[in-house]
Amino acid sequence: MRGPSLAPFLLLAACSLPHPSRHREAPVEAIVLGNAQDGGLPHAGCGRPCCEAARRDSSRRALVSCLGLIDREAGRAFLVDATPDFPEQVEALNRAAGRPAASLPDGILLTHAHVGHYAGLVHVGREVAAADRLPVWCTPSMAAFLRSNGPWSLLVSEGHVELRETPPSTTVELTPRLRATPIPVPHRREFSDCVAWRIEGPGRALLYLPDIDGWDDLPGGLPGILGGVDVALLDGTFFDPASELPGRDPSKVPHPPIPDTLRRLAALPGRREVRFTHLNHTNPANVPGSAESRRVEAGGARVARAGERFALAGGPPTP
Ligand SMILES: [Zn+2]
Ligand SMILES: [Zn+2]
Image 1 (cartoon, rainbow, N blue to C red):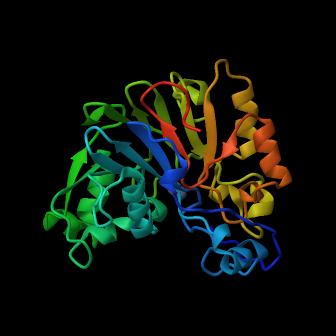
Image 2: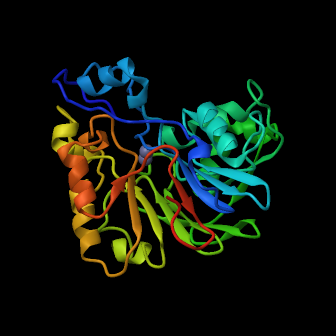
Protein backbone atom coordinates (compact mmCIF):
# COMPACT_ATOMS: atom_id res chain seq x y z
CA MET A 1 0.00 0.00 0.00
CA ARG A 2 1.32 3.33 -1.00
CA GLY A 3 2.43 5.97 1.47
CA PRO A 4 2.23 9.55 0.19
CA SER A 5 5.59 10.75 1.49
CA LEU A 6 8.68 11.04 -0.66
CA ALA A 7 10.85 10.34 2.38
CA PRO A 8 13.55 7.90 1.40
CA PHE A 9 13.26 4.34 2.59
CA LEU A 10 15.86 1.82 1.84
CA LEU A 11 14.28 -1.34 0.65
CA LEU A 12 15.89 -3.90 -1.50
CA ALA A 13 14.02 -7.09 -2.12
CA ALA A 14 15.15 -10.28 -3.72
CA CYS A 15 12.87 -12.06 -6.10
CA SER A 16 13.85 -14.88 -8.31
CA LEU A 17 11.50 -17.10 -10.19
CA PRO A 18 11.66 -20.79 -9.49
CA HIS A 19 14.48 -22.82 -10.99
CA PRO A 20 13.22 -26.37 -10.61
CA SER A 21 16.57 -27.98 -11.37
CA ARG A 22 18.02 -26.58 -8.16
CA HIS A 23 15.46 -28.37 -6.02
CA ARG A 24 14.66 -31.91 -5.15
CA GLU A 25 11.15 -32.66 -6.31
CA ALA A 26 8.65 -33.96 -3.80
CA PRO A 27 5.59 -35.85 -5.05
CA VAL A 28 3.27 -33.42 -3.30
CA GLU A 29 4.55 -29.96 -2.57
CA ALA A 30 3.83 -26.28 -2.22
CA ILE A 31 5.87 -23.59 -3.94
CA VAL A 32 6.14 -19.90 -3.11
CA LEU A 33 5.30 -17.84 -6.22
CA GLY A 34 5.56 -14.36 -4.69
CA ASN A 35 5.95 -12.68 -1.30
CA ALA A 36 4.85 -9.05 -1.74
CA GLN A 37 1.77 -7.18 -0.54
CA ASP A 38 -1.00 -6.63 -3.10
CA GLY A 39 0.89 -3.85 -4.95
CA GLY A 40 4.09 -5.87 -5.51
CA LEU A 41 7.62 -4.47 -5.68
CA PRO A 42 8.26 -2.09 -7.32
CA HIS A 43 5.03 -0.43 -6.31
CA ALA A 44 3.28 1.83 -8.84
CA GLY A 45 3.77 5.45 -7.89
CA CYS A 46 6.53 4.84 -5.33
CA GLY A 47 9.71 6.84 -5.92
CA ARG A 48 11.45 5.86 -2.72
CA PRO A 49 14.67 3.84 -2.68
CA CYS A 50 12.79 0.58 -2.04
CA CYS A 51 11.10 0.70 -5.42
CA GLU A 52 13.77 2.60 -7.36
CA ALA A 53 16.23 -0.16 -6.46
CA ALA A 54 13.80 -2.80 -7.71
CA ARG A 55 13.37 -0.91 -10.99
CA ARG A 56 17.14 -0.83 -11.51
CA ASP A 57 17.77 -4.43 -10.51
CA SER A 58 15.24 -7.08 -11.50
CA SER A 59 16.55 -9.45 -8.85
CA ARG A 60 15.05 -7.07 -6.31
CA ARG A 61 11.56 -7.25 -7.74
CA ALA A 62 8.95 -9.22 -5.84
CA LEU A 63 5.75 -10.66 -7.20
CA VAL A 64 2.54 -10.49 -5.20
CA SER A 65 2.10 -13.12 -2.50
CA CYS A 66 0.90 -16.40 -4.02
CA LEU A 67 1.30 -20.11 -3.41
CA GLY A 68 1.35 -23.01 -5.88
CA LEU A 69 0.31 -26.58 -5.02
CA ILE A 70 1.56 -29.56 -6.99
CA ASP A 71 0.55 -33.24 -6.88
CA ARG A 72 2.87 -34.93 -9.38
CA GLU A 73 1.23 -38.33 -9.14
CA ALA A 74 -2.16 -36.85 -9.96
CA GLY A 75 -0.60 -34.52 -12.53
CA ARG A 76 -2.41 -31.58 -11.01
CA ALA A 77 -1.35 -28.08 -10.03
CA PHE A 78 -3.29 -25.31 -8.27
CA LEU A 79 -2.87 -21.70 -7.27
CA VAL A 80 -3.78 -20.19 -3.94
CA ASP A 81 -4.92 -16.66 -4.89
CA ALA A 82 -5.03 -15.13 -8.36
CA THR A 83 -2.80 -12.06 -8.14
CA PRO A 84 -2.06 -9.21 -10.55
CA ASP A 85 1.08 -11.22 -11.41
CA PHE A 86 -1.03 -14.19 -12.56
CA PRO A 87 0.60 -14.82 -16.00
CA GLU A 88 4.14 -14.96 -14.60
CA GLN A 89 3.08 -17.05 -11.62
CA VAL A 90 1.19 -19.57 -13.76
CA GLU A 91 4.31 -20.01 -15.89
CA ALA A 92 6.44 -20.51 -12.78
CA LEU A 93 3.95 -23.07 -11.48
CA ASN A 94 4.05 -24.93 -14.79
CA ARG A 95 7.86 -24.97 -14.80
CA ALA A 96 7.95 -26.30 -11.25
CA ALA A 97 5.32 -28.94 -12.03
CA GLY A 98 6.92 -29.98 -15.33
CA ARG A 99 3.78 -29.06 -17.26
CA PRO A 100 3.52 -27.43 -20.69
CA ALA A 101 4.03 -23.68 -20.45
CA ALA A 102 0.56 -22.95 -21.79
CA SER A 103 -1.24 -24.97 -19.10
CA LEU A 104 -3.75 -23.23 -16.88
CA PRO A 105 -3.92 -24.28 -13.24
CA ASP A 106 -6.38 -27.07 -12.46
CA GLY A 107 -8.07 -24.74 -10.03
CA ILE A 108 -7.66 -21.65 -7.89
CA LEU A 109 -8.28 -21.21 -4.17
CA LEU A 110 -9.11 -17.66 -3.13
CA THR A 111 -8.54 -16.02 0.26
CA HIS A 112 -10.54 -12.78 -0.11
CA ALA A 113 -11.66 -9.87 -2.29
CA HIS A 114 -8.75 -7.46 -1.96
CA VAL A 115 -7.12 -6.75 -5.30
CA GLY A 116 -3.85 -8.59 -4.74
CA HIS A 117 -5.70 -11.83 -4.14
CA TYR A 118 -8.26 -12.21 -6.93
CA ALA A 119 -7.66 -9.57 -9.65
CA GLY A 120 -5.63 -12.11 -11.67
CA LEU A 121 -8.93 -13.78 -12.55
CA VAL A 122 -9.16 -11.31 -15.42
CA HIS A 123 -6.76 -13.61 -17.26
CA VAL A 124 -9.16 -16.56 -17.37
CA GLY A 125 -11.98 -14.67 -19.08
CA ARG A 126 -12.94 -14.13 -22.69
CA GLU A 127 -10.31 -11.45 -23.37
CA VAL A 128 -7.44 -13.75 -22.46
CA ALA A 129 -7.45 -17.53 -21.81
CA ALA A 130 -11.23 -18.09 -22.07
CA ALA A 131 -10.98 -20.94 -19.60
CA ASP A 132 -13.65 -23.63 -19.58
CA ARG A 133 -15.22 -23.93 -16.14
CA LEU A 134 -11.97 -23.46 -14.23
CA PRO A 135 -12.70 -24.50 -10.63
CA VAL A 136 -12.46 -21.63 -8.14
CA TRP A 137 -12.79 -22.58 -4.49
CA CYS A 138 -13.87 -19.74 -2.25
CA THR A 139 -16.24 -18.93 0.59
CA PRO A 140 -19.94 -18.20 -0.09
CA SER A 141 -19.22 -14.55 0.74
CA MET A 142 -16.44 -14.34 -1.86
CA ALA A 143 -18.58 -16.22 -4.39
CA ALA A 144 -21.43 -13.75 -3.88
CA PHE A 145 -19.03 -10.87 -4.53
CA LEU A 146 -17.80 -12.43 -7.79
CA ARG A 147 -21.32 -13.28 -8.98
CA SER A 148 -22.72 -9.85 -8.35
CA ASN A 149 -19.95 -7.53 -9.56
CA GLY A 150 -18.58 -7.01 -13.04
CA PRO A 151 -16.33 -7.95 -14.67
CA TRP A 152 -16.17 -11.05 -12.45
CA SER A 153 -19.86 -11.82 -12.92
CA LEU A 154 -19.19 -12.44 -16.62
CA LEU A 155 -16.58 -15.07 -15.78
CA VAL A 156 -19.30 -16.94 -13.93
CA SER A 157 -22.20 -16.42 -16.33
CA GLU A 158 -20.06 -17.29 -19.39
CA GLY A 159 -18.73 -20.44 -17.74
CA HIS A 160 -15.07 -19.45 -17.62
CA VAL A 161 -14.95 -20.23 -13.92
CA GLU A 162 -16.97 -22.64 -11.85
CA LEU A 163 -17.37 -21.36 -8.32
CA ARG A 164 -17.01 -24.15 -5.77
CA GLU A 165 -18.47 -22.52 -2.68
CA THR A 166 -16.65 -23.76 0.37
CA PRO A 167 -18.00 -22.59 3.71
CA PRO A 168 -15.27 -21.78 6.23
CA SER A 169 -13.87 -24.82 8.01
CA THR A 170 -15.12 -27.36 5.47
CA THR A 171 -12.54 -29.46 3.65
CA VAL A 172 -12.26 -29.98 -0.09
CA GLU A 173 -10.31 -32.77 -1.76
CA LEU A 174 -8.22 -31.24 -4.54
CA THR A 175 -6.67 -34.62 -5.35
CA PRO A 176 -6.71 -37.91 -3.42
CA ARG A 177 -3.54 -36.70 -1.65
CA LEU A 178 -4.18 -32.97 -1.35
CA ARG A 179 -6.88 -31.49 0.87
CA ALA A 180 -7.65 -27.83 1.54
CA THR A 181 -9.69 -26.16 4.27
CA PRO A 182 -10.53 -22.44 4.48
CA ILE A 183 -10.09 -21.08 8.01
CA PRO A 184 -11.85 -17.77 8.75
CA VAL A 185 -9.56 -14.93 9.84
CA PRO A 186 -10.41 -11.37 10.90
CA HIS A 187 -9.58 -8.93 8.11
CA ARG A 188 -11.18 -5.79 6.64
CA ARG A 189 -14.43 -6.97 5.04
CA GLU A 190 -15.05 -4.26 2.45
CA PHE A 191 -16.20 -6.83 -0.12
CA SER A 192 -15.93 -10.32 1.35
CA ASP A 193 -14.87 -12.32 4.35
CA CYS A 194 -11.28 -13.57 4.50
CA VAL A 195 -9.80 -16.99 5.02
CA ALA A 196 -6.45 -18.66 5.42
CA TRP A 197 -6.08 -22.00 3.62
CA ARG A 198 -4.87 -25.04 5.49
CA ILE A 199 -3.35 -27.45 2.98
CA GLU A 200 -2.83 -31.08 3.90
CA GLY A 201 -0.66 -33.49 1.96
CA PRO A 202 -0.11 -37.12 2.85
CA GLY A 203 2.51 -36.29 5.46
CA ARG A 204 2.55 -32.61 6.31
CA ALA A 205 0.19 -29.68 6.72
CA LEU A 206 0.80 -26.11 5.58
CA LEU A 207 -1.05 -22.93 6.52
CA TYR A 208 -1.22 -20.05 4.01
CA LEU A 209 -2.33 -16.88 5.81
CA PRO A 210 -1.31 -13.77 3.88
CA ASP A 211 -3.72 -11.25 5.43
CA ILE A 212 -5.05 -10.77 8.97
CA ASP A 213 -5.86 -7.66 11.00
CA GLY A 214 -4.33 -9.07 14.19
CA TRP A 215 -4.03 -12.24 16.23
CA ASP A 216 -6.17 -11.24 19.22
CA ASP A 217 -9.48 -11.39 17.34
CA LEU A 218 -8.73 -14.77 15.81
CA PRO A 219 -10.69 -17.48 17.65
CA GLY A 220 -8.09 -19.72 19.27
CA GLY A 221 -5.40 -17.18 18.37
CA LEU A 222 -2.10 -18.13 16.81
CA PRO A 223 -1.79 -21.36 18.87
CA GLY A 224 -5.17 -22.56 17.61
CA ILE A 225 -4.62 -21.92 13.92
CA LEU A 226 -1.11 -23.40 14.02
CA GLY A 227 -2.24 -26.63 15.66
CA GLY A 228 -0.87 -29.59 13.66
CA VAL A 229 0.71 -27.27 11.10
CA ASP A 230 4.25 -28.13 9.91
CA VAL A 231 4.78 -25.10 7.64
CA ALA A 232 3.16 -21.70 8.17
CA LEU A 233 3.27 -18.81 5.72
CA LEU A 234 2.07 -15.84 7.73
CA ASP A 235 1.14 -12.19 7.21
CA GLY A 236 4.40 -10.24 7.29
CA THR A 237 3.02 -7.04 5.73
CA PHE A 238 4.80 -4.72 8.15
CA PHE A 239 7.78 -4.91 10.44
CA ASP A 240 7.09 -1.46 11.92
CA PRO A 241 3.81 -0.08 10.50
CA ALA A 242 4.36 3.50 11.69
CA SER A 243 7.59 3.89 9.73
CA GLU A 244 6.47 1.83 6.74
CA LEU A 245 3.30 3.85 6.09
CA PRO A 246 4.57 7.42 6.37
CA GLY A 247 1.80 9.98 6.62
CA ARG A 248 -0.92 7.36 6.90
CA ASP A 249 -2.85 5.99 9.83
CA PRO A 250 -1.69 2.38 10.32
CA SER A 251 -4.91 1.57 12.18
CA LYS A 252 -6.76 1.89 8.85
CA VAL A 253 -4.81 -1.07 7.47
CA PRO A 254 -4.12 -3.20 10.52
CA HIS A 255 -1.71 -6.12 10.32
CA PRO A 256 0.27 -7.77 13.12
CA PRO A 257 3.83 -6.39 13.04
CA ILE A 258 6.41 -9.12 12.46
CA PRO A 259 8.06 -8.62 15.91
CA ASP A 260 4.65 -9.15 17.56
CA THR A 261 4.14 -12.40 15.65
CA LEU A 262 7.68 -13.55 16.49
CA ARG A 263 7.02 -12.93 20.19
CA ARG A 264 3.87 -15.02 20.06
CA LEU A 265 5.59 -17.78 18.12
CA ALA A 266 8.40 -17.95 20.69
CA ALA A 267 5.83 -18.75 23.39
CA LEU A 268 4.37 -21.70 21.47
CA PRO A 269 5.36 -25.29 22.10
CA GLY A 270 6.39 -27.53 19.22
CA ARG A 271 8.37 -26.84 16.08
CA ARG A 272 7.26 -25.68 12.69
CA GLU A 273 8.74 -23.87 9.71
CA VAL A 274 7.55 -20.26 9.62
CA ARG A 275 7.87 -17.93 6.66
CA PHE A 276 6.59 -14.36 6.40
CA THR A 277 4.88 -13.37 3.20
CA HIS A 278 2.79 -10.45 1.84
CA LEU A 279 5.54 -7.92 2.71
CA ASN A 280 4.76 -4.29 1.94
CA HIS A 281 7.22 -2.69 -0.50
CA THR A 282 8.57 -0.54 2.34
CA ASN A 283 9.17 -3.48 4.71
CA PRO A 284 12.94 -3.70 5.33
CA ALA A 285 12.66 -7.35 6.38
CA ASN A 286 12.46 -8.13 2.65
CA VAL A 287 16.04 -6.90 2.23
CA PRO A 288 18.36 -9.89 2.60
CA GLY A 289 20.90 -9.18 5.33
CA SER A 290 19.02 -6.20 6.79
CA ALA A 291 18.80 -5.86 10.57
CA GLU A 292 15.09 -6.62 10.34
CA SER A 293 15.64 -9.74 8.29
CA ARG A 294 18.26 -10.90 10.80
CA ARG A 295 15.73 -10.38 13.59
CA VAL A 296 13.28 -12.59 11.71
CA GLU A 297 15.93 -15.30 11.46
CA ALA A 298 16.96 -14.90 15.09
CA GLY A 299 13.30 -15.57 15.91
CA GLY A 300 13.49 -18.91 14.12
CA ALA A 301 11.58 -17.78 11.01
CA ARG A 302 12.44 -16.49 7.55
CA VAL A 303 11.00 -14.33 4.82
CA ALA A 304 9.38 -16.49 2.11
CA ARG A 305 11.26 -16.42 -1.20
CA ALA A 306 9.84 -17.04 -4.65
CA GLY A 307 10.78 -20.53 -5.74
CA GLU A 308 10.98 -21.90 -2.21
CA ARG A 309 9.30 -25.30 -1.93
CA PHE A 310 7.80 -27.26 0.90
CA ALA A 311 7.30 -31.01 0.66
CA LEU A 312 3.85 -32.07 1.85
CA ALA A 313 4.35 -35.78 1.40
CA GLY A 314 6.19 -36.54 4.62
CA GLY A 315 9.87 -36.96 5.33
CA PRO A 316 12.33 -34.16 5.96
CA PRO A 317 11.63 -30.64 4.70
CA THR A 318 12.67 -29.93 1.13
CA PRO A 319 15.97 -27.99 1.22
ZN1 LIG B 1 -3.38 -8.52 0.66
ZN1 LIG C 1 -6.46 -7.93 2.28
